[in-house]
Image 1 (tube, one colour):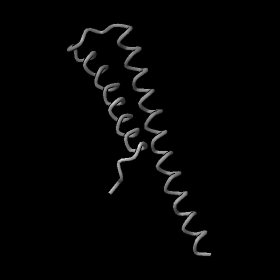
Image 2 (tube, rainbow, N blue to C red; image 1 turned 135 degrees about the horizontal axis):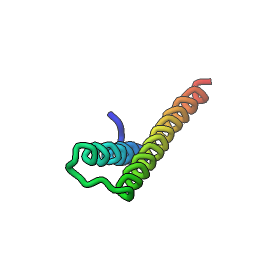
Image 3 (spheres, rainbow, N blue to C red; image 1 turned 60 degrees about the vertical axis):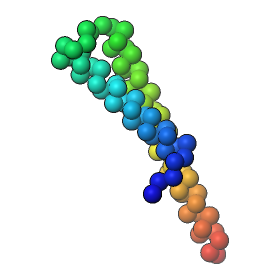
Length: 77
């Protein structure tokens, strides 16, 4: 099971931000929310920020696991 580290929270927050960035334009197209340029820019910005935050979290998880594996290999030699 994945420990609840800072990187895990970054991935979860990034996913939520990207979900909001998807749902806002979808609701604008369907007609539930009135379309405006400000809301469109906000939707794009939150989606881009969510992608960056999520990728940063994934990179942090990857480097942490990679560091642990290299530490184990160094101990075996």
